Image (cartoon, rainbow, N blue to C red; front, top):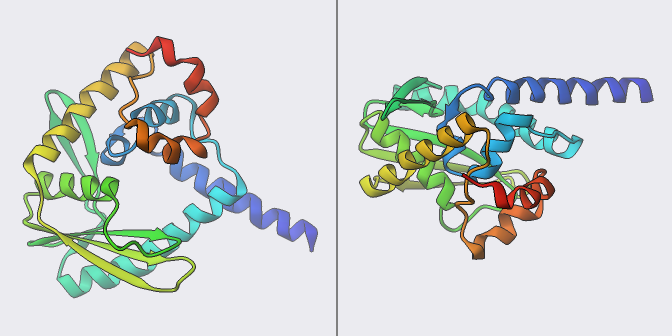
Length: 211
């Protein structure tokens, strides 16, 4: 039985690693809505994957595979429509979970259902609204522990979209120069972002090298 357990764990790790590798060569919207330094290090070194992280990602993948067809059919839309958006010569990949004529839907798995959407998720959804020229967005949270669902609507912000796109310039420049970008996370938020970051040590050592 131990051999079978190890085989299953290895299969999970390998499948999730492949998912991460597919995102290393291009800039995605999700690279711009989190810590730019983390995005930089992920593209340079790959994302370190432990068993706990692999299971969490796999759960999200399963939820998406199960629910996006249902939501797409209900809204008469399509799932995972990918497009390349160009901003001042920079190519950015955008792939919302569900796209319909008048709404974009993003699914997010979480431990506890939030009482308001997370800012990073709103920024991601906001970018999709502008890129696909859709007036309304929905964020659907699925709890891993509470077995519940919570949905929030959102109607976009042009200034936030500009802010997101400008970060693409910073990340692209950092990748081209092979030097980590400045940290874009506020001091108050760094405790949450940095606590479990796999690049925490190298980030500190590179702090004097920022572009």
